[in-house]
Picture 1 (cartoon, protein in one colour):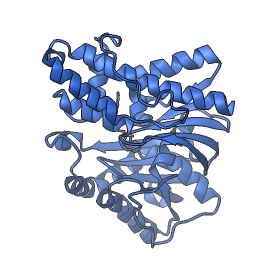
Picture 2 (cartoon, protein in one colour):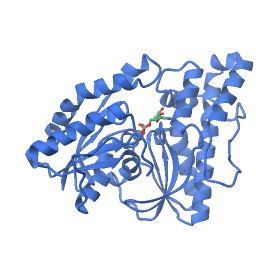
Picture 3 (cartoon, helix red, strand yellow):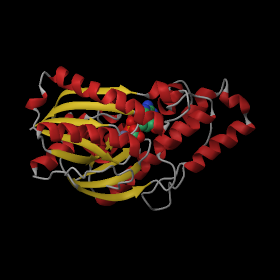
Length: 331
Ligand code: KG4
Ligand code: ZN
């Protein structure tokens, strides 16, 4: 099936044309990051307005780059949630308009499900697998038994991993979004320089907690102001090491308990070079088959929305025109 997919849950307006939920013919992402950076984070009202300006253009560009016309499109998949209500509604309205005007079947998709399945656009992975979804809004461990069959093993009890990166970056004076800035600084620092806590590492659950780590960074820079200046590389490296160790060890514990030796790491934080490295080392040492999509498929994009979209439409499931945004939507 030739699908057009739309994504507008946060600060990226994206459209993609994907064949059979596996082959990306085009994937266009219009980022609003520069606009939100001025405010130190995503401003929901501005996000909605920017999506509105960009949505028709990204759809047109996606069709053009794929070399197809809207009349060739056999299905439309759109992010229904979770995300910012106003932002989601822009993508949903555009998708409904196209679906109604051209009589193309429409399906609403969970954004996190898109992240988990993005890997299929690059390589097949057998079920079941363990999946770690780490983004600006999520830090979840799942057991995935098939498309649509997810069991939550653990999740953050406070901040998401990406949120922790962004908040720590802000408090040490780095621009939004902070994850990538910390990643870059960490490359030139010593991860053992500062011993930050490893929250919940030995609590026997698969849950995460990152807000205490953020406080630990705040306390450290309060006592050692130079850590924000010449010591910033060590600070970034030490913070990143703490996050990556907890994410990797909790994931390892889930694999040990379930005996499922296939792992997918997904979401914006899966772009982090420290996390990619620590997961690769763990997988190599333990005979675990690790799949992490390339960075452009880890960050928000519309192609990933086409993977579950194609599956659900193919299974005969369609959304009606009462399709509404679901700002909170656990998988
Ligand atoms: O999946 P995503 O693009 O959007 C959401 O669904 O939230 O994830 C965005 C998050 C942001 O918090 C951003 O700082 C983080 O992913 N991120 C990173 C890196 N690149 C993006 N965090 C750490 N290291 C990176 N290289
Ligand atoms: Zn995302």
